[in-house]
Length: 253
Ligand SMILES: O=C[C@H](O)COP(=O)(O)O
Image (cartoon, rainbow, N blue to C red):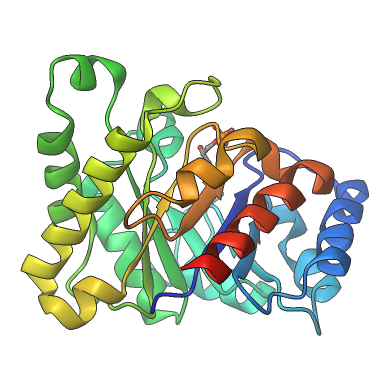
């Protein structure tokens, strides 16, 4: 049975004052029923990890370099994330792919670095609106899965997040059937490549305009093991009902 995961991606938001939101989440949720993760900006990782010490709330980064160290001004390695208190890292988010020209090959190298450092790699895949409208969604997702996930992937060190680009921050979401089709496809691809053991143990998250009002419906979809939440993870009052919906689904399934 895969343990469900509620992950928040704060993106380029948050200063030390916002750690009060994290503190509120730690107080409200004990992590008994679902895994909890917040990925704040790099600047808050150490303070966030210290704040969460003694709580079942993990802290993650939003990117890492593929090298362990070296002359890469402005970059952060997986080792550094780990040293700062992170235990996970989001990789290949569509905003990184678009803003920093990250290819799936680069994402795979970063995921390998994350595995080597002992971090959980949350590898993002997702189609653009034009690809969906052209009915190329599964081709795109299949290609991203093949190229972005390293051979070192296991259920313990890898999570795949399906995030349709057109649903991110837009208030638009795919229908439950559309989400189910993609998640079932990802599961089948993982089983084919890694075998049933690993293929069935990798958790699959949905991301894109998840909020309190749609979380329960999304969490009931086949092969959805949780969510990667952006905007609605910034405030405890918004993220908490989403976590509660996932806890309810964990009890029901
Ligand atoms: O990483 C999170 C996703 O990009 C979803 O963001 P959103 O919940 O603001 O749509």
